[in-house]
Image (cartoon, rainbow, N blue to C red):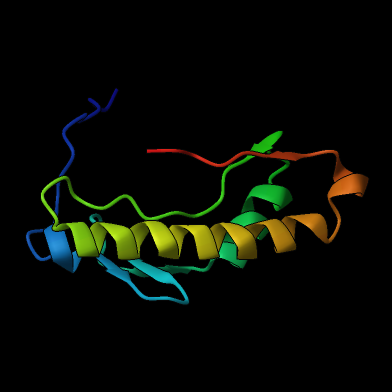
Amino acid sequence: AKKRNDKCHWRSDVTGENAVTVTEDHVIFKSYRDGAKVTLTPESSIQAQRDIGADIIIPLDELPPHHIDRDSLAASVERSHRWEARSLMEHLKDSRERKQAIFSVIH
């Protein structure tokens, strides 16, 4: 039998700021495994969770690093609030038919 290797092999070009790009419209994640880019919007995040049948849906939000300045933190919180509003609008399109709940995360 083949022995499983549980070590996580990170690509050296996918770390820190290279791994995630945040804009007002979306987030682009870069895979640590193969470098592939995955783009998520508040709407596509809700759609994906809805499609897999999640009982509880969590809106896309930004979790900034602990060492940012006050203005950057305020901008991040405000962006997360706008994303949550977009997420809620997407969720409400057919939430009664699917009986899925949506909850926000507070950091």
